[in-house]
Amino acid sequence: MAKNRLLDLHEIGQSIWLDSIDRRMLQDGELDRRIREDALTGMTSNPTIFQKALASSNAYDDQITEAEDKGLTSWELFELLETTDVRDACDHFAGVYSSTRGGDGYVSIEVSPGVSHSADATVEEARRLWKTVDRPNVMVKVPGTAEGAIAVRRLIAEGINVNITLLFAIEAHERVSDAYIAGLEDRIKSGKPIDGLHSVASFFVSRVDTEVDKRLDVLIAKADAAERDRLKMLKGRAAIANAKLAYRLFRQKFAGPRWETLARQGARLQRPLWASTSTKNPEYRDVMYVEELIGPDTVDTMPPATIEAFREHGVVDRTVDKKVAAAEGLLREIEAVGISMKDVTAKLLVDGIASFQKSFDELIGGLESKIGSLAPGGK
Image (cartoon, rainbow, N blue to C red):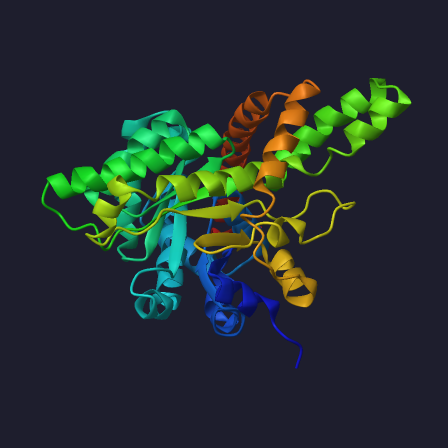
């Protein structure tokens, strides 16, 4: 039997989470098989993932029909379907959660994109989702905006597990690390335990190359032959370099007296979670974003196709903390040719929120169409 490389990632200390959810895999045994055979230890969801699940499956039809009799709005109906799936998934991962003593086995559910720039609205929605799912291994996803970081501190202080998403900039990563640590300290001050809390910081990878490469292509089109070669050498390398610096920051933040004080009281690391690790450019190796960011105390959330590809031909080696000086040098070189990483990461955050909002709007629209088709006399 061929060696399963996914198990080797687990041995190094990297958790594999599935970047997908749909009701069929919760019911037909596929999720349990992945947990058993691929060392899968968690799952993430977002509006885009749920949009695809609802559009491609009739597994939700019965619940939609039942809920229609209750007069729910489309938003309330979506939240009912979403929280049902996430609660069910949490139960599938309960064994992982138990065997790791709360170190893993989490399922993420995201606040709606519309609250991205309001800390109060984010906290209110996160509380509702946390209470509705009602499982210790659910994790509420909060966007990595400045307001999101304020919400993170408050939610951690309240004892709610948080996954901070759409992190592209090192500065944003630092902000949410600080928010997590401060939230733990606030909780201790209020006399509450911190040993059951968990958080991950979802740092996005491939989208950084997509944006930087696009800007490099503009420069390449105008450059002379010598400069063109230099610019081409920079393509497909910014994302991994950026993530390696995020990992270095993680190691710095979660060390030293301040952190050790919390660790003695049971605080868990806020692990970096590598998101957007599927390769968007067909010219690049299909598992390169996985291979170059392997290391302890990390999570990699992969869509099914990337998991299959890595199982088949991924190379396993501890890479996340290697060639970090070279990563710094590469990003300096990108800045030197006129591409601002600050501009790139700011744009990606705005685009990421807009993309999720579009998926959310389409999801609600699709749900309304499905309600109509399932109604008596519908087509």
